[in-house]
Image 1 (cartoon, rainbow, N blue to C red):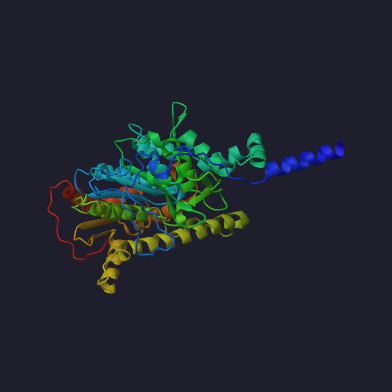
Image 2 (image 1 turned 135 degrees about the vertical axis):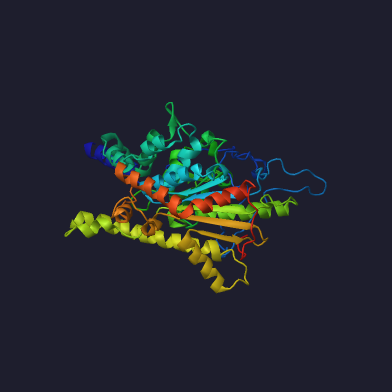
Length: 485
């Protein structure tokens, strides 16, 4: 009898320890509701078009669904159909924040305060973010008076990784890991919730996105397909899931869920009664800059309006601002005669991840220019545009309709060539800041210095010129080349 009881207990505990699929997203419509009659999501996270790349799509294009339905056979349009957002100035302005842990979170915030100072941030319509950049994007889109340099520095300069490790070692969490679907990503989401995304003891969800902020598009990577997954109304409509009740902290965690280090963040697909799931990992695996989501949103909205017989919502073109926190090397290792086993493993892991993400970033920048260029454009012209973007951080091109498109590229590694640096080895010091979710106050201070120097010596005149053009104080000059949607 004792043996039987012990055997049953062993089987019970073994089954409890098996990995499973936990999800915090909830159903939007009952399963009995027909797909065409389901209530749609209406949060501030919206693209107003389908920007998902189908499996058969070529790398140069994007399949666009009609989201604004014209009258057909005298019938009014579907009341559930999406409508394009109103745009008061006729310019699409998108801000892309790259991945890179706390380094990217703080560099993004520092650059955003510079954009705010020069008058461009208030014109941003969409923020597309990846990994560490999603911390800052979500914090900005859920904050009012809390958005200021002092609060942002205090909030984003926290040891999120150390807090996660500490919570992981708590006895009750160790038990939950073994006997439930609770995992390290749940712990990190809890840290983000407690430190950034809660108000008066209440967890912030997508219903809490502020109407006076840009639309928030957090990017992750679908583990099964390898394609981008955007946390937006349209994606959650496909899952028949309620985005307004989804915690911001989990979306940020999914965007930063580095494989092996963190578990995938799981979403249940409620469009079917069967148990089907999406498993999401770090958005940097697909696009570490977050720029592709913005480009496809811009192109899809124009196409949606055209198919609906409506005028182009952006007749004055687009502005794409990219904030990239990638660096060139780790200067800290050059000062060590023997790095040791743990340090070498840590550096190797960081180097592998950084090298991969830097290659993805470079490829994405190239695709920004090449992927949407006219077929007749010469390779020499494309190379010149790419070189100008990398060297100067700015290029002005035109879309296929001839509308101007500005691309501003703020990259942390551009600090290497700036004059009047604060101290002799400032570049090396900035390059040594790791991509983990831990950062020292001194490192954050240096990132703010870097953003200020970049704006002062490299971008101020360009940014103010773009602002003048958006606000109608400067006449648009004709771009020399055409590309884009």
